[in-house]
Length: 210
Image (cartoon, rainbow, N blue to C red):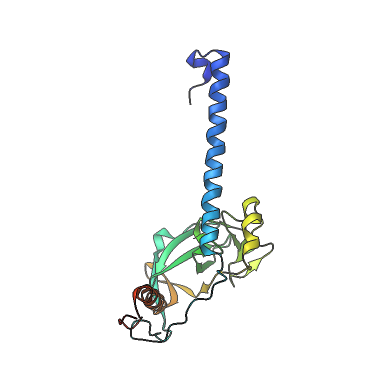
């Protein structure tokens, strides 16, 4: 950035430029805050109870099927103290490596508003920290360790939600990939319920209309 004095600006112009920069920073912070508040509102529990759908061909629940799936290439494995995102069986996974080189697999969505856990910081105490709201999760169990949403903005949003952890998964190295054990039917079950809800909003979940 070119210094103001190099632009041959008058003291008055320099003062005005400084005010413009200050106002831009304030607007940016307010924009980020508004985005997080909107996300919190979207995920906040609703007091209105949803109609329970009967099991149909569209929303039939498939049995859980645990299976190791490729998630990340070994060459993309983060260094100790780092984390990376991957996909296994259609599920978003955070691969974290502690300071001793131990590899862990967790769900890649931080509660309560689902920002990527893989953007977080891996700490020496065996936790990974939410990059926005500051919650720490155990690498081994996924449970919340310490305060819930302790960051500045987290204190505003955290009170709207009950503390909750993230899922953890078995992980192994297999040849040139890092494999994670997941329920390969989880994504299909989620999508079945989603489409059932969409159809029910237009007619009945079995394809008929009211």
